[in-house]
Image 1 (tube, helix red, strand yellow):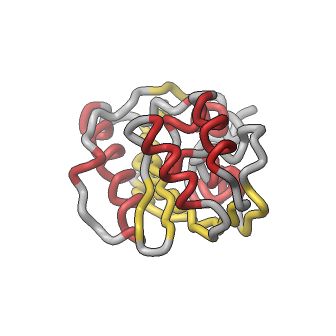
Image 2 (cartoon, one colour; image 1 turned 45 degrees about the vertical axis):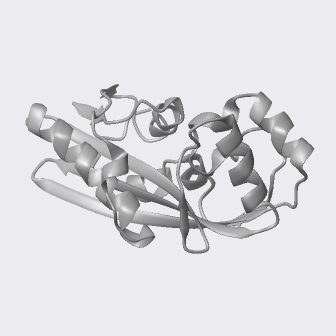
Length: 183
């Protein structure tokens, strides 16, 4: 059985594009303990999640993912509160950023860890727009304090995978992981 090591409802829905034969068991790790360069951070966090569950369920396949937003040389994770979300959104306003999703698959004698990058061009927004968006509570559980799928028009354009910006690079996972394809 495939285990999705995530509590994200978005990842659960996106995995259904590949297979419906999985169960969800969140990995209990502290993501704030790793101090790595942005290029390695998401992949290492996905590995920690995958290893944590693989050790508990050695006969199952495990798929874990972690997503970060890189703005310049700064990593933007999930906001700690509404004020932090507004600060992040204003910092992102009008700028280009990179969304990195690292994923790890363990199972069937195989271990795969990959990182997928998508470039996101943020629209210039004002403080009132940021506050209205944060009032919806939608950005509070998302890296970079936004969801591309949210109907708020914050993104000008992207270069790369839309699903990756949502936090789960389905195209790359389907291509590289030996997950049973069922629909």
